[in-house]
Length: 171
Image 1 (spheres, rainbow, N blue to C red):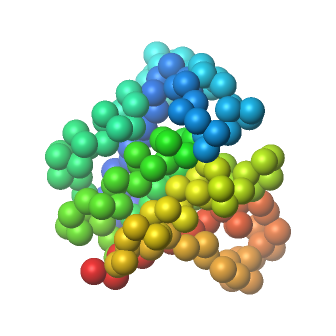
Image 2 (image 1 turned 60 degrees about the vertical axis):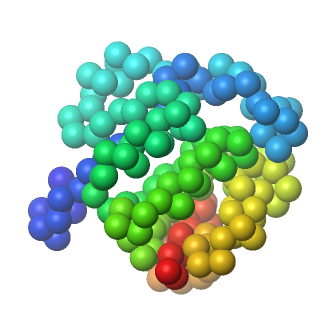
Image 3 (image 1 turned 90 degrees about the vertical axis):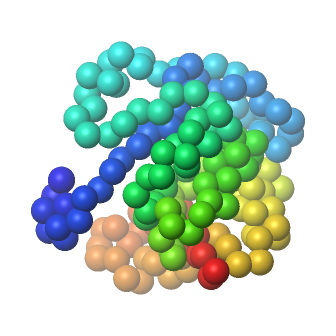
């Protein structure tokens, strides 16, 4: 609401979640040694009572994303990825294959599961990013290198700074 008031631009907010916790890991790329089926269950009723503007979209991303895309939403400008799994992240990246009319030329992205633990370029969100980039000549996902140098203290030293990426749509 504050950003809308400052910029005079309407912002739609959607939250996607299974509503029942994590699905069963597909294979090693989902880091089954770290994540387990049913982790992070949601109290849907309690969350819905707190929502004033955001729309909650419940179900597996591979089933909910096509309906979202078909609804012809306003252009996407930011996505916070907290899917935990490689397999779910790959499914969510189908948004980046959508018609350009619903994608801004650059979309700011936050990836929750890329730092620490046992994350690597061979599992989880990092692997999904690498594979997406290899499969798409004109659409790429890249870290925002040096972002900390453009932020005021104390934000410049916070962990989330290294979790911000940009999806570029060169077509």
